[in-house]
Image 1 (cartoon, rainbow over the protein chains, first blue to last red):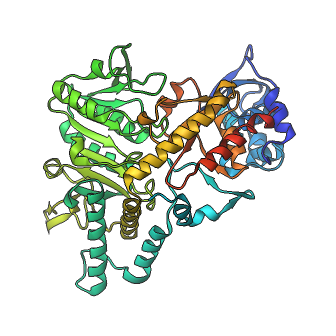
Image 2 (image 1 turned 120 degrees about the vertical axis):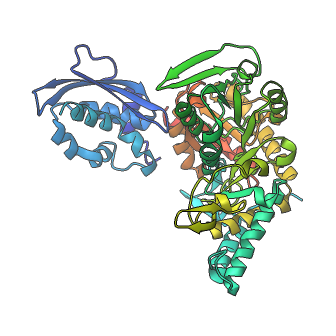
Length: 124
Length: 428
């Protein structure tokens, strides 16, 4: 059960920052076409060109891995700019989820992360 | 004689351990495992007979050519076809694309309609979406009911229009008229297992749409039941080698000679030409006309060996074995369904379905369920199974799917059910 560590179960069962963000600056949707998972991310930002995210909320349907990953990254993202998120990277996602993820599940693990990257890219 | 222990001993991979457990392979719908005889035939070809075909007068080339010719005869014979009508491709997707590019582009015009079903794998849906968009033809899709059966009459008709493509969704009777120039339909759904009543559909459609051409996606059919292309009354049949104990990278398109011989080549190059001048070329006879370039010779040899293996088992016995497994699985899974632990999808009657058993564990995403089963050595597929419109129409983002084949046993089904019960505990 290596992929289902306590921390994943915890965030899966009580996802943080789940819901609608009133007064959001940017909204973005991202999906995994092959499995039907989708996420809607809303953020509040600070700054202009090299902005940081100050708050994130999200909604969507997904498996335990994608749900836990979105929940965890919604806390980590606060204060990050594009550069910081890129530096965090997929390695950071794996680390955040407890150190190992089945390679077949990386698309689930990075769903919210890819959505956040799109948010930064859409406002370059 | 269907001796399951003997059959299992023919498949080397079944000896593997996965996470410390015996491999329970329930994903033959995606690709089947390969018996020793198929692996050996391909290995032998490379070790002892490797040379290009139709090229040399020397012994090895003659031998390789003979192996390919023999394999083609075996495959043709297996589906009740003639060798010259049996074209080797890379897979069923390429076979369908060949029909779309070569036949479809010349025969489907603005105002025509192409009829498919909602059961289709993306490989028998997307090519027709693209062709209809290009030609200004209408794509008509036969809807499915809550049991995964095709809606043959009545019901609601819906129309959609997006990016220049008009789509009509409804029941068979609503969608069939003389505008329909092609019926492209699966013989067995890769998701729900549904085996539409092709004979009935073909009989009915030919009354109202006299000029209709019929293509059957037999990817989940040829590996699992006796298929006789001549008595089916169809024009094209597409399937893949790797789902029928053969190698990956090999597919087959069967087509009626009178249609194939009027079709333009799909790809141009070596082996498919008659005479070449600097100003142009003529085309080779069938089937070479549709086989440009050096083919996957080892793959063809492997497919021939797979056909030998299936012939030895007998396709009626294969179908019977899978029916028994499906009946057993449905019976054993019913209590789980009644407990509210799982949802089952697909036809209720084993006569209406092939060996695909899709389900979901209540409250648990298909990927999570499949991964927990993997921890016990059980290989099942999860996701949308290359049939997104079908899966999502059941109101779920994904499904878990177990598929059965010649080497599966009722003990494996018991083990699957035992481990399905473990899944919710992980999230308890």
